[in-house]
Image 1 (cartoon, rainbow, N blue to C red):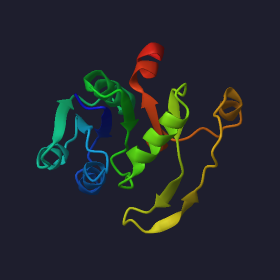
Image 2 (image 1 turned 135 degrees about the vertical axis):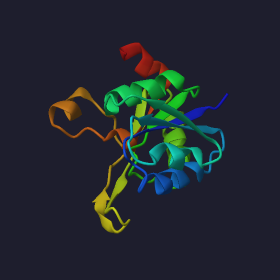
Image 3 (image 1 turned 30 degrees about the vertical axis):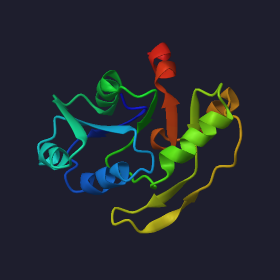
Length: 162
């Protein structure tokens, strides 16, 4: 059983999905499963995803990103999960960094890090640097929550909250 699960909700994503999948497959932590939820795409998204060895693909009627994310979570075997948008790229050591943060804070249910903002062509648009800190309800109130693809969660925590 994989220790880490990456799920990628995808809708009409054939153009950008290959780069996203390559970045997910390039993780330095090998114990990672990758699940693509094809959310009723009308383009070649499903075929693109199925062309990658080691990627599990599920196709469902279009229900939106929340439904696709929930479907991915239901299939995940990993203790830790990461939601990745179809147009996001992971650094090769992203999961290793998240794991190090969990090991440093065993009570944490979620960890997150910095990210780079890129254009559709991969050109750098800036950085969203995060300092090490404990995330709190105040962060939510102040609107400084991380994006889903910036964070890794304990699957059990997500299951508890539904």
